[in-house]
Every structure is written in C-alpha cells, then in structure tokens.
Length: 184
Length: 184
Image (tube, rainbow over all chains, first blue to last red; front, top):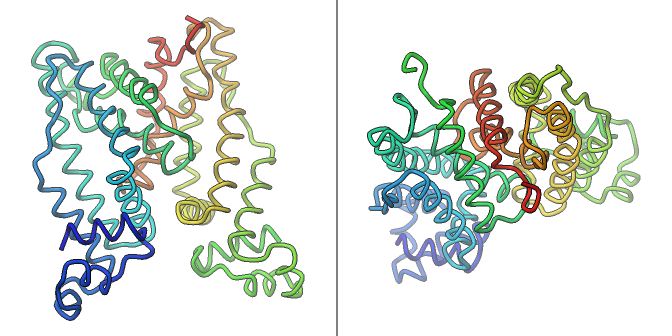
C-alpha cells in the first residue's frame, strides 16, 4: 500500500493522490483502503510513519567533516532524484498544509535528527568537537540551508551547496555554538 | 487593497482568501478586483511584491555579532507575532503550493538577502570577517534554521533559537566558509 501511495504521488503529485487511485494501483478494494486510511492525508502520513522506522545508513567515514558532508550530500542527492525527490518534495509540501501529514513529517524528521546525531557523538568521543555538543542541533544546522533553498527561497541545491552547509555546521560546532547549556 | 488582503489572510487564513472578501473589506467593486488581480494568488503575490520594495531597517549595531543577532531576532519576533506572524506564515505556506505566490516570495526573499547582506559588507570593511565573504550566503545561513523549524520540522523558535542561529552563521563566516570561490 505504501509503495502504491508513493508511486501515485510520483505520478500525480500530492494534489492528485486519492484513495481510489491507490486502491486501483495496489489492486485492493477501495472500501478496504477507506476503512483503514480514510483519505489521501492518511495514506501519506502512513507512508511517512513507515519511513521513520526504516533502517537508514548513518554516515561513518571516520571523521566528522566526512560524515557531515556525506549527510548533506545524501539530502541533496535525494531531493534532486527524479523519482524519490518528487515524492519527498510532494510530502514536505503536503505537510505545510495538512495537519496529519505535518505530524507524520515532524515525527519522521525528529527520528532522522536523533539517528544522525550519532555522527556528533562519535566526533565528541574522538575529540573532534567540544564536550557537550548537541548532536541533533548540529544536524539541524547542517540540513536547514538545503531545506530553506528547496522549500522557502526557491533556490537550487547542488553538491557545492551541500558541502558548504556541512562546512558551516562543522565550523559552528567546533566553535562551541551547539554546546548544550550547562555542558560547556 | 494590500491592507485588505493581509487583513483577510489574518482573519480567514490563506485558504479563506477570496476576491469577494477582499473587495468587500476594501469597499471596492468585485469586478475591479477581478480585473486587476484575477484571484487570491494574484492578491497574495501583489502584497508580497509591494512588501519587497518597502523600506526595512537593516540592523546596524556597530559589530557583526550584534547585527546578525538582531537580524535573527527580528525574524523570530515577526513570525511569533499574533497578527504579522499569522499573515507571513500563511503567505509562506501558500507559496509552497502556488506558483504565482512562490515567485513573489522568492523575489521578496532575494531582495531581503541582498539588503541584509550589507551587514556583512560592513563587517568585512571593519575587518571582522574574511575578505570576500558572501553576504547573501551568510544571511541565508543565519535565517535558514529558523525557517526550517517553523515550516519543515515543526519545532518552536524563540529568542534562544535566534541567538544560536546568528552565532552559528557568525562562526561559519569567521572560519571562511562563505568566502566566494576565487576570493580567498
């Protein structure tokens, strides 16, 4: 059902996502889909919830610069991918207007922040970043400029943008900007 | 007409913005509004275009830390304001789905980036930041974490978030991350 939902979003956009379309694509009776997911937003939210629990390779290149650069590169490559990027752009856009999809997106991103924060935990252990550096805040700082360009200012993102976002987060983390209060 | 548009968005949300509502509020004939603005998106885009040209006080506190902190504080205070914040959140959300509003928002933000970049020009002149630092990129870095939380990850923003975003952009700028290629 999730595959069918994502395929429908890729083909029709989120605006064209319907219970009928997903049911037809999945070869399932419409009433079954209605009973369980209720509407398009329910299908999209469920797809996001499932994605939150999915295994996802946290970068582990051996140093924090490499890890942060890989993290931002993955985000840019994902959103610039013709298939996966279209689906994810549609889901993020949908979340701006729909409360159910928004809650699912916020949960998805919170899970991603938490997992990716291990990059910073390892960096602190290796002595690359100050003791007490907030991993989730470092990750947010690294990805925020990419989402800002993609969804707010409407500017392109490329490998260069990704590298610069990683370097900026790294410089701030090294300077102690993300050290949690009481930990410095 | 612009005041009426913004007041309607504040009261009804962008979803409730109609040519009829704006015409009634402004005390203008419906047909006049239709002829000139065509639809709700046209009204919203026009309100944004007008805002782009408005005078806007670029922070000038005497040092780059103070200027960047004031810049991010202004953004947070604006979006957390019950009236102005509601309107701006609605316009940014509308832009995610509507091409006409999106173009107007992108133009509005590009104009803001350009104006705010003078903070960095002055900092370079004072020797606070490396020669060749890209002002617009520094400004983007300072505001991106705020927009990311507000519109993407759905996390609250407060004075603390604003200060941290400014400090992170400052640390990255000082480290030379935003020096334009060929200028280092």
